[in-house]
Image (tube, rainbow, N blue to C red; front, side, top):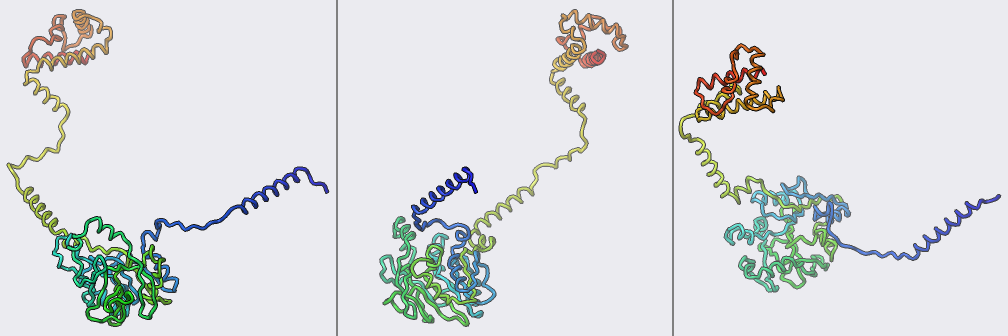
Length: 421
């Protein structure tokens, strides 16, 4: 059996190409590198997506609520990571009643409203506490910028005393990693802001999380029974967002807080709840409403007044163009513009004559008058019978003035002559 030279060369080329790729593959070194970048897709819209996936890994059902309206229908765990600036007392009571009657677990963070009150023009002592936490007997305490204990709450005067640059640096600085102790003795590393503490004034808490050796009544997390349910208050929930859930022991801390189990329902509220437009306008823009009402009243009053008699109704019948032309001619005649009117008629006559008899444009005035008189005589026009060359020259002369009768008679003759050319 003979093998052709072409097939042999093809197999050799294939083997050489295969050997070349194997050699290149043996020289390539694979290096894994983690590149951090911005979130995209669902993670960009939902900062609690990662912790929701963690809950689903344990067999729980995660529900992400971008905008809070009312508590869930059934019991479970509600992680409220969104601001509650817009909450009414009724909404706070409904949230606590949901945890109390449904046997649910509510996890919230305190709301610091002092700086917001100052921006809204209110007194700093008005509504500077969280209504929901006040009903539970929980207060927020500030440790001071250097970590010293201060029983006085953090005020806007303290914030105003700091330079603007220092305030920006404090807001941008991440909370430091702290070693916290769980009630079962487990030590975890988590990031909490050491400047803030929460305190149970009525000592209703079952357990709390704080630094080892810290005051027993202060901490970063407080949890207490409320009827059939439970309420857990944390100084912050930043450790469960997409960026920080994978750092330190944040995932383990979350699992302990919510007691993750199979079949458990967890709701994550991560969006800002905005009230109805009318409620927001009444609460924060009532001056605009008053100004708009006064402006509307002034406008209605101005249009209700009439100055002078009523104007007659316009006639719906449209006039002919001839009436407009006649009215314009009468206006010019009264303005001593009769010669201009008659000059217009003569120019129109010349254009018609030159159009019908192009060779007339080369004639002089006297020769043109002769041609027109001859044309009238040959045409035998009854209205122009007896029209001589002298009469034609007088008819086309626009220099001498004409009275009403003469203007009407000459215009009539000129129109007949124009139409018969």
